[in-house]
Length: 502
Ligand code: CTP
Image (cartoon, rainbow, N blue to C red):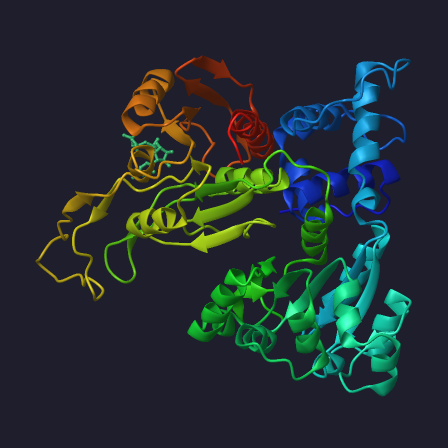
């Protein structure tokens, strides 16, 4: 695979990348990578996207879709002299620039002790360049990794390190420190800090501030994968989520310790900044107060401890829908099968493996205003999965697997006594797309079905072409990126829910 290094990017392009990266909850680098990979971008590859003042058509198209999907109203008559595309472009610039959402905001960043603390220096820069002012608290362990001097140089302010510092307590005090912030971000959040807060301890400045705050807290955990998957950390995370703490990451990949890989890498500074942006965006949102369940990804049905039955679903479409609904203000609970992509920012994600676990998780999350079933749930599982690895015994031949049917989660919820007001299903088809989608609509008790032909590269790919099938008719959407499908679908869901009481 080749590598492209971009040395100079026009400010317009940077701003554009930042806005769409923040919307999707991914880093700017990831956004750029996705665009370079996207055939839509390549279609326009010869167009002069870098020249200032030249509005790239692919960007404009996406903005229009998003504007429509977000259900925003363009102010009439405000830009009479301009053509429609300029009007949309300017509107987006004025209302969606990162500086809009973070200027005048005060963020309290708590840095804990971990190798990822060096990334917090970049995070400070990212938050400040979006207009936020940043105050920092560093734990004792954090100071083993980065110095208060460098943190102070980047925040352009005093760094708070000690609960019992007379001067600090006299000047600001930990209560004021925790209350004056619009948002508290803990990055990196260590297993120790999570345990402290889950247990209600307050024996140092970081934990005391977290106990004293009345503001939202966003944690970006970073630790060794074994620590992250330890039952104690899982228990603490569940407790913190119950207490209303929000999480971004951790991501999966190589760890700083050589030879270690798994889930535990701190989310990238840009991902954290995107999550902060989302949380601080106080503009009225059409799905505020709505609770929406989304299922995503495949399920893995075990045959024995090492083998399982699965499918090609990547979770990209379901995760994008969850993120798009959260951007419109919904309280989204995502039930995800095993996927290799990070949890979307601003969404509470419940990880499951099997169809039965997915069904149980969904049922536990009810009641909800809406439920969107995007997961490619395995229809069958092996009856009585073996406890030990099935061995190949000479002369015995291959084992015979008896399959039993899995619960149909969509149909269960579609006919449930606590049925959400709006139930949306997907139909993954390789032939007779419409006929099959219409049959699923009736059989599963859905309000509408998003049908897609998965015979090409849809599963695992970045683009999708869907048809919305409901009792009132059929709506074909052109091929577009999965994020755009998600944004439009979120807009449609917001439109439908508008008529019901919050
Ligand atoms: N679905 C579900 N539980 C299942 C199977 C499917 O919740 N056990 C949901 C999917 O999330 C999707 C819809 O039902 O929203 C249709 O899934 P799809 O795989 O297209 O259809 P199936 O019902 O599995 O039928 P078939 O495989 O025969 O097309």
